[in-house]
Image 1 (spheres, rainbow, N blue to C red):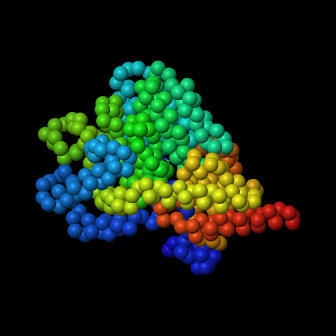
Image 2 (spheres, helix red, strand yellow; image 1 turned 60 degrees about the horizontal axis):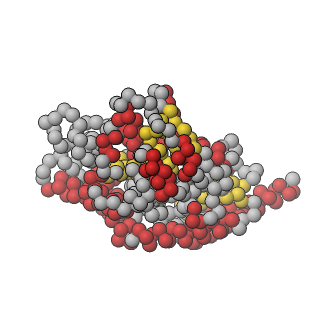
Image 3 (spheres, rainbow, N blue to C red; image 1 turned 135 degrees about the vertical axis):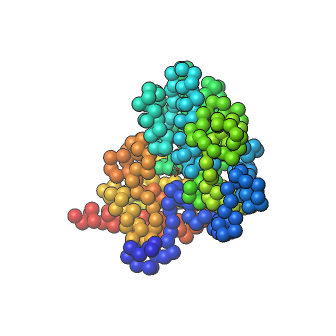
Amino acid sequence: MIGDHRDSDEFSPRRYFDNAATSFPKAPPVAVAMQAWTSGIQASPGRAAYAEVTTSAECMHSCRGNLCSLIGTTDPNQIIFTLNCTDALSLAIEGRVRASRRTGKPIHIVTTAMDHNSVLRPLRELEIDGINWTCVPADPHTGLVCPDDIAAALTADTRLVAVNHGSNVTGTIQAMTDIGDRCRHADVPLLVDAAQTLGHRHIDVHKMGIDLLAFPGHKGLLGPLGTGGLWIRPGLEELIAPVRLGGTGSRSEEDVQPTMLPDRYESGSHNMLGIIGLDASTGWIRSQSLSTLIEQDLAKTTYMLESLLRIDGLHVHGPHDPTNRCGVFAVTINGQEPADLARRLDAKYGILTRAGIHCAPYAHATIGTLHSGGAVRLSLGAFTTSDDINAAAEALACEAAALHCVGVQS
Ligand SMILES: Cc1ncc(COP(=O)(O)O)c(C=O)c1O
């Protein structure tokens, strides 16, 4: 059971600071909606015409509509459901490469040092097949990438720019509109990884010049694990080949993949239970107003940053300016293994964090923590309270002070 391994019960309820991995708790109506669908409906949309199928299809359509409204766009068919953000990024990268290969021209892709392994690993794999890519460096203190450096990395062969919006290590938020301008100017599609920002910060795909937006449903959108999506700018589907092909319930008389969206990219039965939960969570976010949730998130991020910066001996990586960051904090204490610190935070204080490299080796190389066990990451969510933040700051202050005392005595 959760918490069994802790030193005492004194610190329950648990204080959850791992929202960058997946949010907890989920939005209030999620469990109820999933339970109701599981016990009463369980039908696969598009596969028949009875009432339960129609109800499932309506929920799916409603979920696409909610997602569109949260990213500043309108056409629900441009939202492709995926398993998670990794799956959305893979579809965008591999689909773009597959379509580009058909032109017979060389392929070059640009990404950044702040990107996640779900971008880096597909690129490393594609390298084996002769695809070239450039990794644009970031500032070691802030994690910011200069938009002009991205522009300078573009060549006549560049087919895609893939950029992380909010770092899952340092919380750094990139200047996306400026990056979008550079890509638009060069006529190169821009893929944005919004794993840490959707639900936490405003995203307007049109204003930001985004062509492909990959997002999880289970982090800032407060939906269940196993959900995510890719928004494709209308018209761009011609430049993105499908990578998972098969039955869609549409055009069944044809043995070729349908060209219309979303069917072009959504083969096989959906994770309908997950989508029901995501429809409930995104509906809840709309009912609360995304802007209100973002304002609260900004206030908590500022408070957390100020609280951490006051702790002697604690190194807070990434931007010290709250306007350049989201609520993801990487911290280290000199002389302390991040994994040990995370274990103590859990066992002694009931504070749940994640230590290590966070699937972002270049981001850790940028901030200088790749070869020292990474960092301890604390990440905020919609339900993190100021009491939680005070508790985390106190625990970190105790740990930093304890280490300092041991160091002085020995
Ligand atoms: C920046 C970033 N990109 C991509 C991913 C992958 O997301 P998912 O877990 O939904 O596959 C993560 C996960 O933590 C992430 O932080």
